Length: 295
Image 1 (cartoon, rainbow, N blue to C red):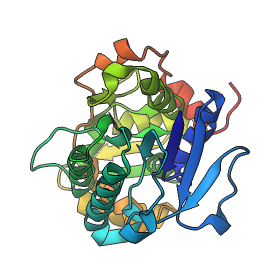
Image 2: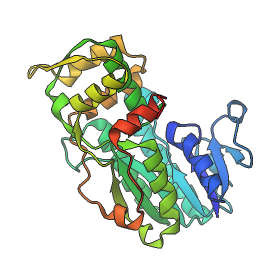
Image 3: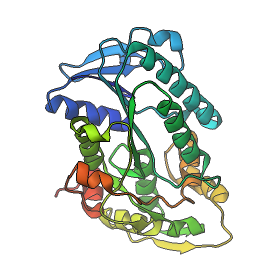
Image 4: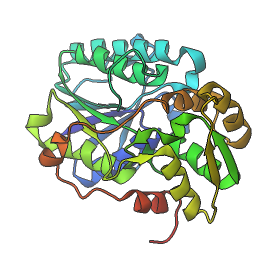
């Protein structure tokens, strides 16, 4: 099967490409700057920018399946606008080229006006992609636990650097994190299951945890025991300031993520587990692997 991966240099895309190669697929990586990308052996590379519709001409010719893994948090305040335009350009061009299937990794969270801008943007992109003339498979995930994950990097640095944390009420918000290995298992697994085409699925790890529990488990692996004190009057808007001070995560990435922590992100539909049965990684093990500790 001829597969194209957008977002090939990103956290998930760079891990997905070797997984696809291992299953015998022909893979093309789409990047914005070929000179800065060293592809795995056997991977073809095309240079294009989803924000530039003209650059997409011919990119999807001969492609059976496309993975849409693009998300422009780095664009700062305009990230939602840029994501909308990128998805529109993609849907129009992929449809015209005759792509038959697209697989999108979106964000978990209930639909509604109370969603953060970050999660609303993820769902808007899903809506735009669904208008294309191909079968769209959407996998919605919460925090993905992996060494290069922006969300996990923020958690790791907070847990390792702050002995005492005064946090907003969101620290008690429920979340269902998932290991990178399990995300890859689902992304690759849906390729061989025709019933997943045109469907939306929620994916998560085996445990539902509060962000406080996530911070404490991560801190334990780092040899730390932080004291976490939720303060009802402290808002996420104030939290972004000490996140900026304590972590290396760029503001354009950290701020939308922080505002998204107010929303519960828990799987309510487990259909994917029957269609793509994989052994889910316990959170403790996922953190250990992400931190590079010996098993």
